[in-house]
Image 1 (cartoon, one colour):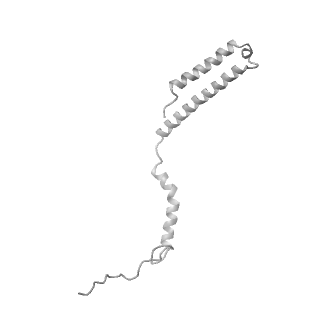
Image 2 (cartoon, one colour):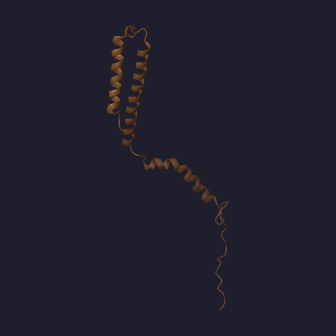
Image 3 (spheres, rainbow, N blue to C red):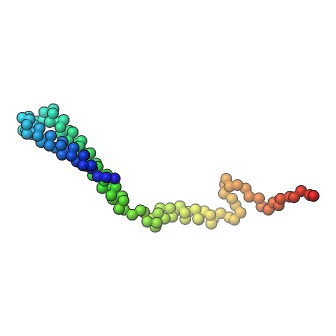
Length: 119
């Protein structure tokens, strides 16, 4: 996952420059006590651009962490399923020989031999 593009970083810089330039030129925004509609719109757009850059940075860092982190070791994978495996092993040991689980296909007790037609 790439980080913020140069184009996005340039857009953020242009948005900041536009807000700063407007504040120096606008009498209402210059005082800092109030903003005109243009100044407010420029600040909103700058905020959106900043948020987009932050999101791109966070996604990039998250992808780097995920790539650097080793996969789950085999022992941890086994720990997750060990209780279920042990439970099933206990159930198998308790089941008497010859009994089939419910829903299992029936197995004939005698071996059936194919009958050959008489010649």
